Image (cartoon, rainbow, N blue to C red; front, side, top):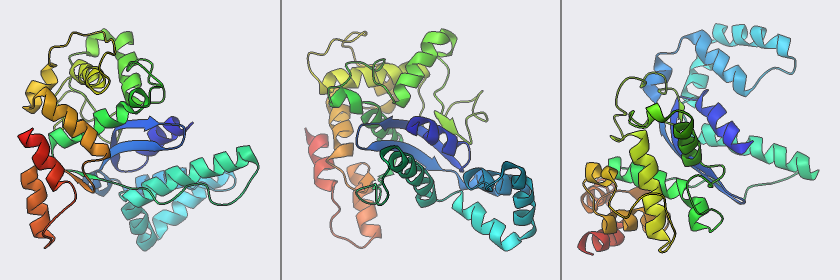
Length: 281
């Protein structure tokens, strides 16, 4: 239900979802906000998407609700902005889960421990590392031993898709869901230059590095995706681990972290020391 809700929201908000993992007491989502997409939506499209999130009490009243929203330009622009807002995306995800869970337990009140936490991903290596970190959650937790058995993760969906249609293995990887999914059908995914097969192999390889001794389906050679990223195994493995513990609000190289600290007029950012250590080994 939760994974389905993530995919559903990706089809409503101006976002692209790259990976997700739903665990027993938390979830992860890697996504980008795509404001240019919402600017191209017609007024009626914005209203229709908003009513999908907050429908009328009676289904037959939704058409009238869309018309009323289209007639109120100021309110419509507020909704357009909210459809490109990460906080609103998480609100529509968290509130939905909380209501479902509370109804199931026949209780009311607060469900989540606190507000969501987020990290900015600076470059292609940071995006790939965050995706792998998220997709490997069940493997690191010891409740799965392969990408195929990692339930409620996007990498399982990707792997199953390749089994059903092997012809897509060498096609450029796309977001798992989102506004640009169809647009990118015949072109490379600009933010992550690797194929579907290369990404699944990279995640499988990384899982075996994080859990030495785990048997895998591919050999121990570095996957071609690492060459595309210009990284070696030791740096890559440490970079993936760092998404969860080494970095803080910003996953990036030493240079990018130092530049961001200077921009924010701060002498130090959490993660700079970690980034330096994994570069020097």
